[in-house]
Image (cartoon, rainbow, N blue to C red; front, side, top):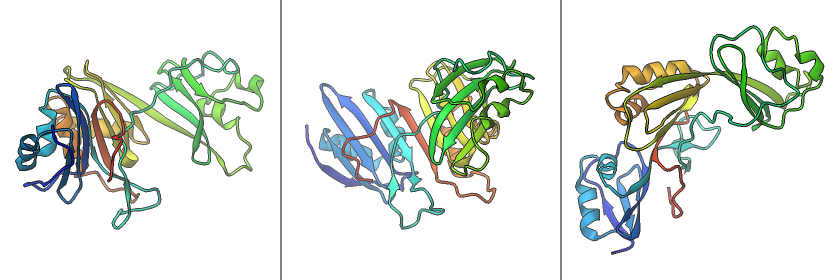
Amino acid sequence: MGTGIERRTAAVPVAPLSALGRMGSAQWEVELDRGGALAVTGATGAWADELAVSSDPAAWLLGQGGLRSLTEGMIFAAGTVSGVGDKPEFLPARGPEIPDGPVHPALPARLKPAPGRELRMSGHERASERWVLRVLADGTLANGAGDFDPLDPGALKDTDDPAAVWRACFRDEDPDMWTETVEIVRSTIAAIPRPLVAACGWLGSVEISVKGEVVASGRHGGTLLGLLKDAGLKRDPYGAMRRLAGRLPEIGEPTPGVVITIGDRITPYTSRL
């Protein structure tokens, strides 16, 4: 097995990518930048040659039985709009991150009235998320996580506004504290070989299990799922993600990028992107 093989792809990459896998007992790693420069470790020269001349390197890698993880796409540093000239952070996509812990005992068992849809409600201190709560469509508090510290727990028992639960945790004069409520939207498709996660800029994020369970969440989670369905989510989940990445609707906000991860969500240890 060789190491440190460098090639240039015959086709222009759809997006930069990084991948890990195994060939027999040895691990291989692939990195491809947006200019087409390909770096391969732990694989044979012939294997790297075949990858380099493929019309779609990501699709070629997905056909390898030993693939463990593939991340494709680009996220630029916070504060940049176009990303041109800026060094990107190349990290695996993260899913909706729905809480799975217990509901804080200071909260009532049910919010009223029922929101009519599944929600993810969170409280933040500057850029840090301090706590999060999942609210089911019937108003039941399903899961929570984080450091919840209400100012007056007794005042929350009879609230008619679910968001008031979170606003009550903060003092109005503190600009560093803020809350967010987003919708969680679910759907199903046919089973897929590997789990898939995508982070789609301001739209939100989506996660698909190997059973075909689809969960979208974010500022515009419902819109995201609708766009993916229009792009062919049921017949080709990965292709739908890629097609959407090239035509995100414009709403006058910076779009950090679209990142897709298939398989394990791991960061390659030698990433140079």
